[in-house]
Amino acid sequence: MRGSVRKRGNRWYYSFELPTRNGKRKRIERVGGDTKPEAEKALTTALNELNETGRFFESSKSPLEDYMWYWFAEYTLLNLKENTQENYRMVIKKHIAPPIGDIALRDLTPTILQTWINDKRREGYSDKSMSIFRCVINSALRHAVYPWGLLKENPMQYVTMPKRQRKKVTKEEFKIIKRDDLIKIMEYLKPDMPLYMPFHIGLHTGLRVSEVCGLLWRDIDLEEGTLTVERAMVNSKGEWVLSSTKTASSERTIPLGPTILKLLKEHRLWIKKNKLFYGPHYIDSDHVCLKESGEPITPSSMKYNTNKLKKELQIPFNFHSLRHTHATMLMENGAKIKDIQARLGHSRSAITIDTYSHLTEKMQKESVDIFERALDDIK
Image 1 (cartoon, rainbow, N blue to C red):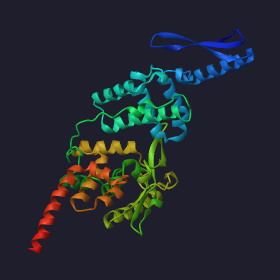
Image 2 (image 1 turned 45 degrees about the horizontal axis):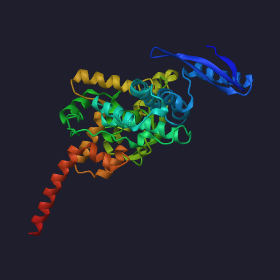
Image 3 (image 1 turned 30 degrees about the horizontal axis):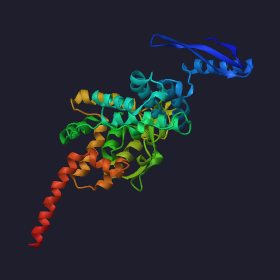
Image 4 (image 1 turned 45 degrees about the vertical axis):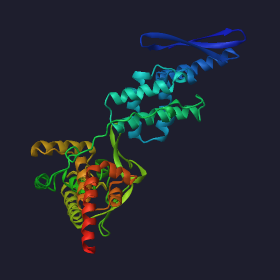
């Protein structure tokens, strides 16, 4: 792509044509400086930006889409985790650019943004998705105000999240694993199966699949009977790598019971036998969850094996079911909400209560029965 420079009055200008947008062609002309070399340098800078990003960003005059990608490059890629980067990329590409991306940054109003977020609710997106949509555009517009000074205020601050009729989540929707199904799965899984150890860790601790795959032996203290969550396995540019946990509260130390400790000790012996059997061909690592060859088990491998189990046993099961099953078993047997919150890595107990509201209501009713029995002792 080429551009040109010309003198108008006492100043030099540069100009070039932008790629076609929605069937329309647009030519850009801007002041380049007081001299021809200054204008040529400004032209080169603008064309380099256009060639590298496919966009030309010029303060508040640019469309929102161009600004969002500018914010993505200058903030998101430099400060956020790679899995978060990918989530934000998809939000911009699929949910912001198509409906409102052509509106100039300076022309954004609370009305436009309110209609946009309302439309997302009407399209049926969950509270979690809606929260992510709002977070992405709100963060981008906050940066446009400060530190970049492109807007005087953030129009998103006046937008309210549209309410939705909250439906109570049932045990069936959580896919809580029934007792008989748990027995079937335990009988099906053998120590040499890739899903064997991850399944038992998930059931006994409530860890997320990424946290289970990210476990290293140094995270487990077999003598003290504890497991520490410090990292997760995430996909980065097509490769599975170890990264920090989902949130700060996700970093936690969990007490382990004798059953899972016994399984972990047996699993460690199984790994030692495999090392001897495979010899120099063994893939040596500190990962807890491994295939026979020593290759670490990834979340995609877990998904494949859980789907295989579900198909063979005809049980409605996914790995996250173990997290809900773990929490449900604790709640139904009288564990304290604060302890469950700590095990699951929730930042606030309110999240645990809201997530398992169908169980906390049952616990409230049982509390009434406990109080009535205490009254009987007084009478």
